Length: 70
Image (cartoon, rainbow, N blue to C red; front, side, top):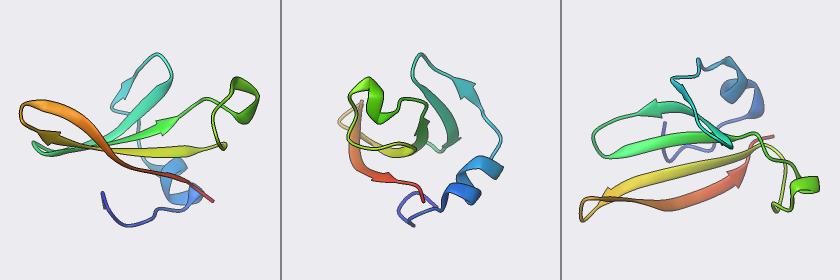
C-alpha cells in the first residue's frame, strides 16, 4: 500500500486516523506513514490531492515519496 500509487477514489475511501494541520494520516506501520494533503495549488503546493509517504529512518520520519492521487 505504501509504495503502490493509489487512486483518488482509493485515498478518499480510507478512514482518517489522525487529522494534522495540513494533512490527514490514512495509514501507519512501525516503518511507514501515508498522508493525504488537504492543500491545493492555490496554497502553493505542486498539485492537488498530494499523497505523501514517510519512512522511519534513523529514528526520524523522512518523506520518501510524493505523488498526486488521480
